[in-house]
Every structure is written in structure tokens, then in C-alpha cells.
Amino acid sequence: MINMEKKGLKVRFHHHKLMVQEEQPTSQQEMGPAAFRFNPRNADDIFAEFFGYSSPFGGMGGGSGMRGGSRSFGGMFGDDIFSSFGEGRPMNSAPRKAPPIENTLPCSLEELYKGTTKKMKISREIADASGKTLPVEEILTIDIKPGWKKGTKITFPEKGNEQPNVIPADLVFVIDEKPHSTFTREGNDLVVTKKIPLVEALTGCTVNLTTLDGRTLTIPISTVIHPDYEEVVPREGMPIPKDPSKRGNLRIKFNIKFPTRLTAEQKSGIRKLFDFLDPASSTCEYIAF
Image (cartoon, rainbow, N blue to C red; front, side, top):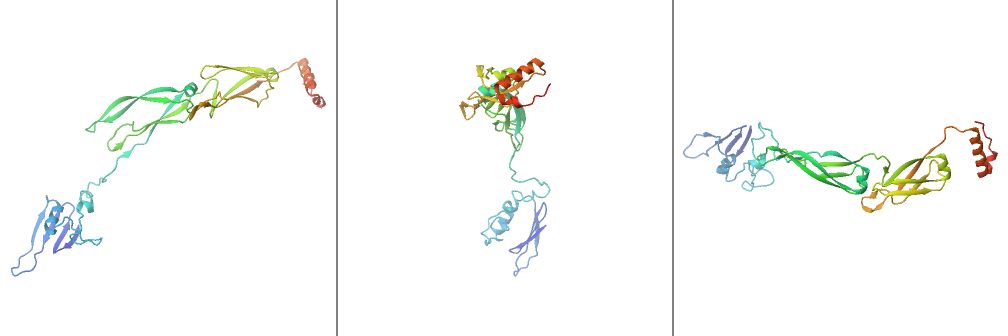
């Protein structure tokens, strides 16, 4: 209960009632105090009738005069001064945004190389004018751009379910890259590993490859191939997303297959060959196999 005194009035606020008791000024004809209750009337109207303005707090604080204040019960306590007694609901609560919904979108390396269009069918709940939710199906179109990488996100704003007092979630598709039988991707480069025998590593070889867009590449290699050797073919890698006319490189790595066993005659022939190619090696002591 709140007690206040203004202009000879005693005001008591109860949880659900407003009671006003008027004290008459002393005069030649003394009259006893009259008490009465107001239940259905608006509290602002009652104070306006006695004070000439709507708020009993108009003259309190901020240097305002009795008639300078203009705050009503709504301004002091909210739209309903009794809403804090019992109901306890938040006032003026803004709708919250639902967290985004992420879905993986697998793409082949060919699709990421050339670009493609995917159509995704979704089912979600939408609300009608009465607030009732209804299931609907929609088709979303996603344009995959050449060169997009794993982790690229495509967002469809507010395509989640509609709920009361909730802003629908954004629907997010995250690009994933399917494994490829020939190539792996490293940034904007394409990497391939070719298995060759030792004789080709020493004498040279030719690598034939089919590109992701169906072309055939023939790459002759005449140099000696050691285990860490890479053959780089410029501009045969993945398109660069910001400028698809530019591309990364194609990098060819080698897995050299060594023989598991050699005959004595083969070993002797190899020694003679390397002695001829590098006479300094003849100073080394050979260990018999």
C-alpha cells in the first residue's frame, strides 16, 4: 500500500483498489469526513477530477509545479499500474530472432569447377493472419559460382518456421566438397599424384590427364623425377571466385615405385651405369646384397 498527501487529500493505493478520502476544510458549518470507494473508474480520471491534471506525481521531482507535471499512471508504472501485481508479464517485449539453421550442401569438384544450379525443396511452418501455423513447401534456387570453396555460405533470410513473437530463423546452406577420384584441392590449386616405375622416374615419362571440364592434357616430363619433385602446369587449377577468368595451378606429384628385388646381374649393371654417369661414386664402398 502507498500513502500520499496532496491538497488535503489522503490517497491509498491497494493492490486492486483505489480508495480516496476527502478532508473538508474548516468552516462555519462543520461537516464530517465522507469516505467512498471507486472500483470501476480509471485512476487518471479520478485525479484529474480533484487536481485538474491526471497525475498525482505531477509536482514531484524535476522542479515541476503542481500543474507542470504531465505524467499519468501509465507514465509512472507502465500502461497498467496493476500489471505488476499478479500477472508478471514483460512489458513492450520485442520479438526475438531465432538462431540460424545450417544445412550442408555437398558439391562435386566438377560442380565447383564449372559452377551449377541446385534446387532445394524445404518444408516449413508459416502463420496466417489469425496466428495459426500451416505447413508449406518451397523450392529454393542456389547458384553455385565457379571456384566456390568448402565452407562458403548461402543465406536465405527468415526462411525458418514462423512462431508468435519470434522472427523466423535464417536458413543457411554451407558448401561441402565431395572427394574426387583423381584430384584434391589445395586453395585454388588442383593436385594429382601419379604412380610411376623407377625407370620412368630416371628416363622421363608422359602424364595424360582428363580435366574437370572434360579436356585431355598431355604433359611430357623429361627431367629426372625424384620423390619430392612436382610438375606445375600453370592456370589449370580451380577458377578464382572473384575473377573466374583466372585460375590456380595444376600440381603433379609422383609416387615412385621401386623394385622389391634385383638379380645380381641387374645390380651389377646399375652400378656400372652410375659409375659411368658419376665417376666420383666409384670411390664409395659397395655393400654386397
